[in-house]
Length: 181
Image (tube, rainbow, N blue to C red; front, side):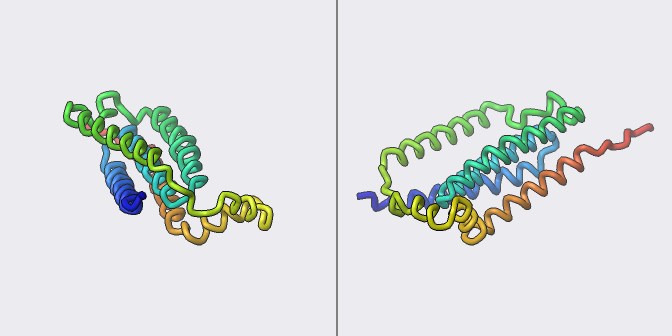
C-alpha cells in the first residue's frame, strides 16, 4: 500500500542532513553573532528531525527543548549582554529572493508533514513492547540503551557541535583591541 514510504524517509533523512551541514557551515561563517546563533538553532532543529526519523523521539524532543531552547537562550543572552550584535548585522537574508526561498522551504516541509500524517504508518514494534521493556528493565534502560549503542555517534556529534558553539561564544565574547591610529 505504501511502497514509496522508505524512499520518502530516505529522501527526508538526506534533506535534514544537508540542512544540518549547511546551517552548521553558515553558523561558523557569519560575522554577526546573533545571525550565527540563529543558524545554530537551525542546525539543532535539523538534528532533532534526524533523531525523530531514527525513532529516537525522546532524544529529538530533548534536542529541541534543551539545546535549541535553553542553551541558545543563554547564548543569545550573553551576546546581547556583551552588546556584540549590531541591529544592521542581525539579518543575513535581507532580499526578496531569500524570503521566497524560505517560504518555499516552509511550504515543502508542511507538505511533507501533511504526507506523513496521511500515510497512517503502522508502528514497527508492538504497542506494548515499550511497556513490557520498562517493566523488565526500568525506565532509564529503554532510553539509555539506544542512546549509548545505536545513536552514540549522533549523540557525540551533537555534543561536539555544542562544544564548538561554546568555544565560539567565548571567542566572540573577548574584547578586541581598538585601533588607536
